[in-house]
Image (cartoon, rainbow, N blue to C red; front, side, top):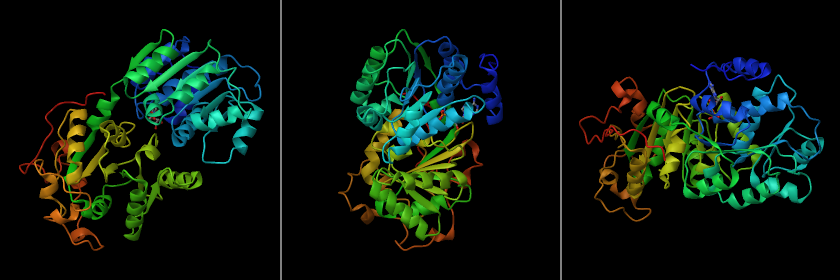
Length: 446
Ligand code: AMP
């Protein structure tokens, strides 16, 4: 088995890794680090949760420790581009953690906050700059950042950057960098546009592909509950109140829905915070800090806001809404079962989201077990032949739900977590009753 010492990382890094409690490199680290230490370009197919941040941060820090040069104002030596401010902050934190025994200067740049501190950090000069593309371009245009000295470029979560419309910005940024540089591109998926971007940017790259999405997904016990739209809040309350829920992320499609769900949960005595793009940076940071410390039990998030949330012990992911993009399902549930732990992912599906469920099951190559043993089960939502009702009529078809009033449903927690001890972790209501058990197909990496 490869160890970090086998990878010939410098002593200050090995010390920091030992302090972090990392003993064995993850597959992406074992695969990528030797190539990166040799200076090669890299195409990394890996998603968050695989240890990919350390896979690029460690060899970069090693290089910086070996080849010290005095800082030049505004000119970073290493640029990491990330799609969101949360991810950028987390990458920056990782550099700080792994680089704690070396003299590292670093900065993180993203929008939504004042630019004063970012400009000041660049004026002093940094080794490592982690940035979201939009604000970085702003600061370059204002003359506060110069990319002439970039030796290493990392594009993290390239597929997300593509989804978020950053590819043109990335091309503009790359055009400002020296051609002689090391370039790393990480992506969870490889759509044609990313393959094209990679072939334009990378020179004879080593390609490292890890399938921890599958191992991660295999560790996640998944279930779907068919409920009418009008019962989703109560069903969510029931789920988050289950005793095994330590820390949960609830996903909604819309920002206003995230607010409503968080408000509802708070009104019912559950400490919940919404996190989405309309929240100020300060509010997002406070919510994340509360979530990390355990003061906030439930984070209600939209997809983009939740991207890259790096909290290890998220015990449950609940999909209040199914995502309309199947890949997002995999990204969402990957927030749980991290760092070798187990986790639950339970999705609420109303009649209108049946088609999305089919797409997700196709994407993950398995049928999700149905959890029916709860007060909100809706036959209408579960019937695959039923035409979806028009928007807003979801509540009419409720067969088995509670009244819309507050309070805990039946005073009981029937959440699937209760069946945690069952073989395979199947939800207790599933076997023998319309149970669409896994067809055995593993996760197909997209
Ligand atoms: P990432 O994929 O970079 O978001 O990392 C996922 C999580 O795994 C982070 O919380 C890291 O702290 C953790 N991690 C990364 N590498 C290792 C390792 N070799 N051993 C244990 N945990 C790790």
